[in-house]
Amino acid sequence: MPSKEIEEALLNGEIDLAVHSMKDLPTDLPPGLVIGAIPLREDPRDVLITSTASSLKALRDKARLGTSSLRRKAQILHYRPDLEIIPIRGNLDTRLRKLTSEKLDGIVIAGAGLIRMGWRDKIVEFLDLEVCLPAPGQGALAIEIREDYGKELSFLHSLNDEDTYLTVMAERAFLKGLGGGCQIPIAALGEVKGSELHLTGVVSSPDGEIFRREEITDKKERAEELGQTLAKKILNKEIVELLEKISAI
Picture 1 (cartoon, one colour):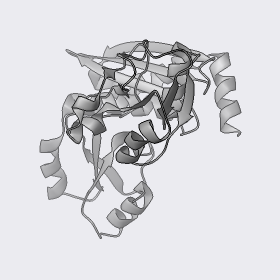
Picture 2 (cartoon, one colour; picture 1 turned 90 degrees about the horizontal axis):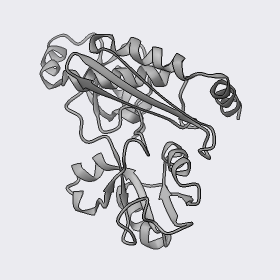
Picture 3 (cartoon, one colour; picture 1 turned 120 degrees about the vertical axis):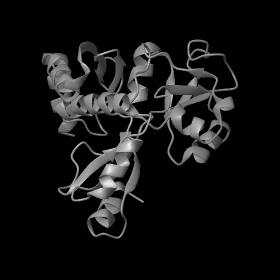
């Protein structure tokens, strides 16, 4: 069921809470709804599944690589422009089957879904974060509730992981600061180190030719401000023109 229909059910009182994949939840929630908790995050990295090589680097020249994500496509082509990226859609089972049915050399997907399904053994490589940064919120779950909840909201606080919450809020603030949508390759990952939060962000053209990566560190309590600041930092003239061009399509 799409997020919008789930949120309508929440607002109508048909359900009491909703659990979303955080990376699929829009940065602007409908009035009356809030994120009640973000549990401990699963590994946020993207992974390679293949039977033909030991790593992304080791794939043959001009290998056919499947992915459902413009973000992955852009970063992978920036790293290896020789690869042929094949768009694949569907649920996890469907995408895994397409490795064979589409005669692909490999597929790249989020590792969290495989791990949660107990399929970690299918993973050949966790992609280096220098090569492929995840989507904002990837690997995290969001528990969404009505804003007027009292007792229920207090209960959900016990499910919330503070460091995950702060890093995800920073990543989402970065995405929102760029006006991010599904047609713009945007990646971000936050990491709490002691009292500080380190945030890395990427914006790219879909073909990976225009590519900008920036990092920033500040106190973790300033998570959302950190994301907004990084968005401003990454917006040079070339990136502004890229975002305007893609948004106009």
